[in-house]
Amino acid sequence: MNGRALGYALALVAALIAPWVAYPVFLMTALCFALFACAFNLLLGYAGLMSFGHAMFFGMAGYFYGHVVKAWDLPPELGLLAGVAGAAAIVGAVCTGALLEVFSWRAAFGLNVVLAVIAIVGAYLIVPESADDEASHPDLGGAALSIAGLVALVYSIIEAPSAGWSSGRTLIGIGIGLALLAAFVRFELRRSHPMLDPRIFTHHRLSAGSLSIFVQFFAFFGFLFLVLQYLQIVRHDSALVAALSLLPMAFGIMPSSRLAPKLAGHLGSGRVCVGGLVLIAGGMVMLSRLEATTSYWFIAIGLFVLGAGMGTAMTPATSSITEALPKAQQGVASAVNDLAREVGGALGIAVLGSIMTATYRDNLNLLGVPDSVAEQVRHSVARAAHIGGSLADQANSAFIDGVRVALLAAAALLVLAAASVAALTRHRASTSEPQEHDDRARQFSQVSS
Image (cartoon, rainbow, N blue to C red; front, side, top):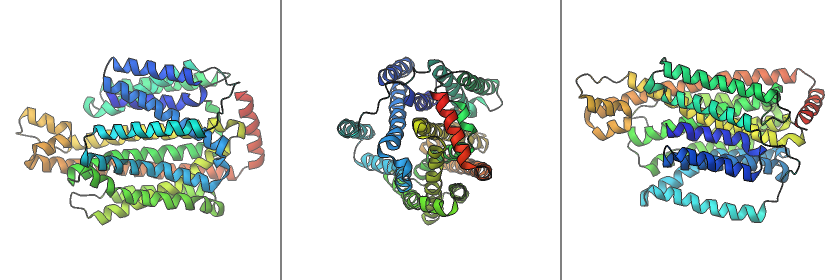
């Protein structure tokens, strides 16, 4: 089984169940999945366990910021939180690249162990306990359905370029995944204490914010997956230089995320969020024009525009999610925000990576090439780079074509999302917001009580 598929699916499921289950139950669930995965692949088991920890941290971090720090009530602090969340991926890549210049790849994991120990000690000393003694029992049925559905869907998308998008294996896998997720929604609607109540998405503001976060991280993680390969394989940059090349994105995210709350106060969060999504789409279109010899200044401008769009859209989107639900439901709001990010990131890598791979293979001309060599070239552009010569040049050109198609597809999705967010926020503005919010608050409180 493809390790990425199950690893991503475990992360998504963890994002769903983390805020609703007690720590011992969560830990036992994580260990069971890790042991199950280890039976197939040891690395997969470790990846699954890390995915659980990652999602558990982000789910609880959101709850902590909402209930203890009260950041949801302070737009500037919320903007800082969104900016740090976006820029951290770039900073992490730079730190990893620096380590790889001196040490082996194992050093990157060693650094994370050290940082995790520091974070554990800090959390124990600083973070107050906020357990809910009246929390409901974990929704094991919903967790099982979401696990099965997400594994089938993500795995089928990742494997589609190899099996064929129209093959029975791919279509059946995607169909099973969607059917299981539909069963999950139906199951949750019938539960008195659901893991995730689908009815909350009838609130247009929450739906708009969730859609925006989903699409932002779909594009963001899918783009990172592709651009790092472009920088290292096509432009022959080292890991450190490739990571440093992404810094203009962080320089765009941080100031725009701090400015976004002020813009939202003057223009409205819906308009600011739509503007941010359009900026991200513009950055994607710019970066889709990359060639092997493209000037770095052009790349830097595109990265800055993309980052500015991320920072601009992320803060009002997160605010829309948290403000849509009453105070008692902020744990749910945090989970929805994290769910949108996790699902978007995983599917972004799977879908954009699959689009790139399919286009890459379609654009290769390997007539007369020995079968063993042709198979290596079809497998990845990295293997073609090791072979060298004209095959490497052809593979680079095909890879760039694949990146172009994938980024244009992401840009189209971002524009569609921007139009949807505009429609959802316009619908909310045309209704009586105070009465609607009060009615929703009572409804959600009754559902969760």
